Each structure stands twice: as structure tokens, then as C-alpha cells.
Length: 489
Figure 1: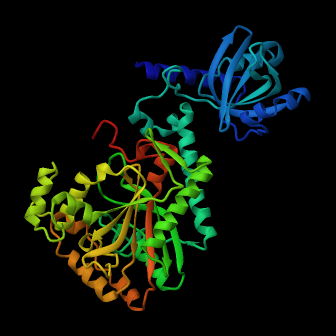
Figure 2: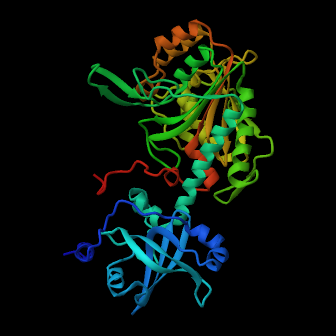
Figure 3: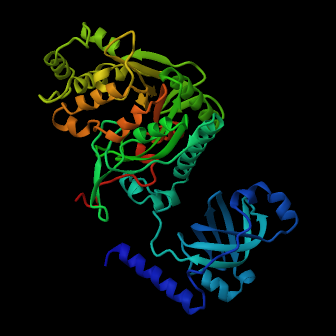
């Protein structure tokens, strides 16, 4: 028998003893009236009045000394020490207490006092077993440190690593701040379909599913864009959605196939308005979650009170290449990609080659909060072309701490031009064609009724959460990130 199974059997035996003594190891409820944090804050008052307090949570440590014991209990607000004495509880209750181990959930009632070392404690007058844990917690001093195990068994990670809870509370605060910011500016929060007959609004491979009753092939959405624009056409003027998107792509430090994105659209605005909106929104998030506009991430610092810098996609690449990249031939771009250490397969489009060069040459030098502007039209099928620079669109990508956190356009609202852009995507080759925008006839029909000039923006909630919680990986701000099956199958 393995050590793990042996420990499991020991705990099963202790459960049996509790049941034999008339104690239910999994009762229905417990009436708690205090949290650990409140006990600390109001200790003087509660001790002076000899108030009987009732707490509940998980036992983390136990120190037994014959007829007396100390234990630490953790609830959602923090930890508090419990003190058990046989002469106060009675022999039967104290014998039942001996069946309790670290990891068990307990409810306890008692009065407050300070130990000789000054630690706030509860002298337990009665207790109830609320759930008997059949598996031991990780060893006290080493805890749960293996990253893979922490992600896979997030429930255990949350139990033993308090900082993990703080990261997810910061994430929740970020989402609340985004909502309150947009609601205060007249945006309407909406919901659009996750199951879609066509995928669009981005360039990505979709997940495919099937609806049995309709005998219909469906896709998990890769973006919310085309449905939200339908609402702009319908006259809602300011809309946003915070929801799940799904892209059948690789997994790394900043990518998970299931992710949360904010998308918003504002009629009678353009991409410059979106820049100002994003700057204001991030300042608001920082003030609400951090108490100021100074943000630290990975040992680097940024002040969101300052205007962002701008970098031209086309001009920066042209300067690095030594000629106008919009006029460079595919073979010339392909050679430059290979020279930069990247891959340039024969079926790669001009857009893919330009993206690869930007990632290799320009992105590593972006440090301060930056808007990357002036994207080529060929890699921006939903953005409006600049009237003063043909071949370049009104689009930006915001970078914070060198990480791209979103995408924004002056939205293309000419239905004839939009159809031509969709059709051009059909000419892409290989993998890029699978990721390309589909020809969405219903969206084109909606555009033909007229969409006002519109600014649109998507922002990755997961990446914002990484930054404001100062977490190095997207897996650290997702409760249950996608992982390979256990055993690597």
C-alpha cells in the first residue's frame, strides 16, 4: 500500500470513529457570526464584553499537548487561533477533537483571549465537524510549490497559498472597474451568441461543434465583433460585452484557448477616441484596484497618468528594412524573416511575413505604454483605410509592459469595401485561410442598411489581470487553465 493510500485509510478510520460517537462528519449547515478579520479588528470590544463568537473554516495546523491543543483556522478573510481544553469541552468532546486533522472543516464557538505570546485566540466552548477531509494537505513548511500541480489542482492551491486568492480578487476588481467605468459613460452591457454559424471578427482557427436538433455545424466564437456591430447598426450606439472567446491555437505565457475579452463599440467615434477611452479606463482601473496610477509588473514600472507613446507599424519596419515595406516583394520579406531567425514557409502571406518581422524587430524594444498604429490594410480586414495614406488603416494595438493587450479600429462601414475585404481573405493559403475572416452574408446585409462611423476596441481581460495582479503567466489569473491530461497523454 502506498503512503497516500495508507493516509487515506487512517482518515477513513477517524471518520468512522466520529460517526460511532454520534457526530455527523458532513452536516447541513453551521451558523457563523464572525470572520477571522473581524475578530482581529474588534478584539478589544469583543473580549471586554465576553462575547461568544462563532467561526467556521478549514483547520490548517494542530499542536496537541495532552489535555490542551492549539489549532489555526482559516476562513475567507484570514486566520485565527483556536484553543481546546479537555476540562472545558468535556472528555467526550475532547476525544472527538482528537479525530480532527489538518484539512478538516470545523465550526467553533468560544470567547476571545490573548495567549502569553500575545496572539489573539478563541477559547473553544463547543465545536462541530463540518466536513472531514479524507486527503492530507501538503506538508506545512514546503506547501504546494509545483506549478503544474497548482494549476491542475487549483482548489488545493487556493487552500494553502493565500497569495493566489489575492490575485483572483484583483482580477474580480479589474472586471468590476471596467464595468463601472463603461456604465458611467453610457455604454450598455449586452450578450451575443457564443455558438455561431460562422466565425469572424478576428483571424484565428475556431473550435467546431455540432447541434443535433438542427443538424447544424457551429463554431465557438473567436470574437464578439460582428454581432456587436449589428447592435450599433440597430441604433444602440454604445455597447460592450465581457465574455468568453475561444481560439484553437497554441498555449503559452499569454495565450489560453479559452479567454475573457472586453469588446466595445461607440457610434460616431474613431480609433483616436478609442485611444483616449483606453487611457482613461486603465487609469480608472489602477486607481480603484491599486490606489494610484503607478503600476508594477515583473519588476518594471509604469505611470498610467502620462500620455502613451505611439509607434508606426509600417514606418518602424520600413526604417529597419531600409525601404518601404508596403512596396517590398514577398521573397524580400521572406528572406528578412529568415534572417531575423523566424520561419517563413512558402505559403505565408505578405501579412503574416510583416507580422513576423514586427514581432522580431520592433516588439522587443517596446517598453513604455505604447500605441502601435499604421497597420497595413491587408492584415486589417475590418478597419477603415486612412484617407491620407492608402494601404494603411486606422487601427492601433496597445502595449503595456511590452505585452499587447488589445486591438482597436475605426470600423469599416462601407458594405461594398467590406465584401471585397472578405473576398480577399479567401485567397489566403494554407493555415492562414483557415484562420481568415469568413464571408458573413447577414453581417453584410446589416451593413447595407447603414452603420454610422464607429470606433471599436477589444481588450484582453486576462492580460489586464496579469498586469494589475503582477502575475507572470495567464495561467496565474485563470482558475482552471487548459492543461495536457495527467500523465501527458
